[in-house]
Length: 224
Image (tube, rainbow, N blue to C red; front, top):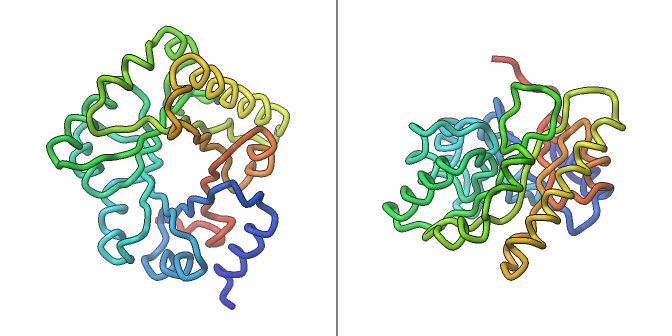
């Protein structure tokens, strides 16, 4: 068994079976991504649309590609064509653009609402007040080709796991409030995407349904 397959086996042994794994292939080769595929993973994630598109053409068609990085408006057409799930929807205008493009491409696409839960200002996402003031039921009803399937967030990059826990707990509470107030009748609204290589155990303890891990699977990231 290769190192990547062994890392995946070890992770899955520790992870509750109901929690999904998105293998983050940022800076990794198509061959490395294929090793993860051969070890049983079918959800692969990329930060950049161009890398996602390039790798998609080299891997089997049953890979479910997640775009997890910030999506610029001018990349929406390419993102909709390449991705199955866009996790990084951080504004209503972006959501509308994705929906318009999906209609043009005659394609349905799943999206997660990204929320800003970290202390770093550089991270994107809806604010909690904005979430509270938005009629998400009305927003969801207006969409023709997009399904809002849950929420996503990134905790502060810190060794303070209690701070990380509070931030993950905040995201789980946002999900619960949205589900109760707006999405209760929609069975597909069920994902809480939080947790990465350094903090996934805390995320799972706080209710994550999907973790996004790269280094844990592939080893230290190659710098380019």
